Image (cartoon, rainbow, N blue to C red; front, side, top):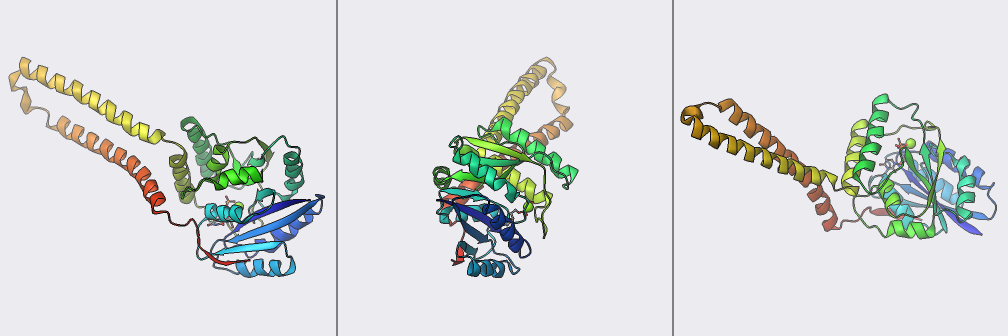
Length: 309
Ligand code: UDP
Ligand code: MG
């Protein structure tokens, strides 16, 4: 018998929870020799999500939950789920049925074959999403894969099944700022990706605005790449080289035409503004990383539990 832990982050999903449970439990009956262990993580929902989860846990002893004291974000919920899971295989799934449960038997079969340590899923299209959002996502994947050693497959979801060994590796990464797509890739292991077409959520709505996604992407880049710091170094280097040329030019001009110094107010102001701007930009980039260090050294918990069963 294998135990399959199913980790489900939920934030204001009262409508989706029962639909999710019935869809998944139906699919699981198709997989022989597997006992499920559900871990619903209530990420500080304001609606009746927790009540729905409690209802399920009363009727099914395999349903467990962790309820946070407030909204800590999906990454924290995934971490809590992984920490509590006890199965020898673990799968992370969204509750809105955008991660098709019908893939579970195939994922299990692939992972069970021993050829892979993880089976992930990637969307090959983004129908139902705004053009602008898709454009930004595409750019994000191409940028991060250029500047980071941690490669992220385009369109990859958090929906993946992993072996206990890989889960333990993920849990050993205790960073406060968690970017799962990067973490899953960073730990290594052999991953197989299943492809599928985008499915729209079954109920409720996504609270990922373009702004939030952009912030998430920027933070992910800072978590897995130091290239922006190199940009600061190169910008500094080039403006230094340019200023040397400038100084040389000014000295020569002074020697050749001694009265020339009255000219050049506009150029001085432009140079000051340009250098000032570049300095602020570089300080901002460095500040981003310092902020991450600050959060990490405080060692605050990644989440706080209010209730658990
Ligand atoms: N979620 C969460 N905490 C949050 C936001 C979302 O646990 O602060 C959960 C949500 O309930 C869902 C999953 O994360 O199960 C994915 O969220 P969503 O559907 O909003 O994201 P999308 O599918 O648009 O990427
Ligand atoms: Mg969704």
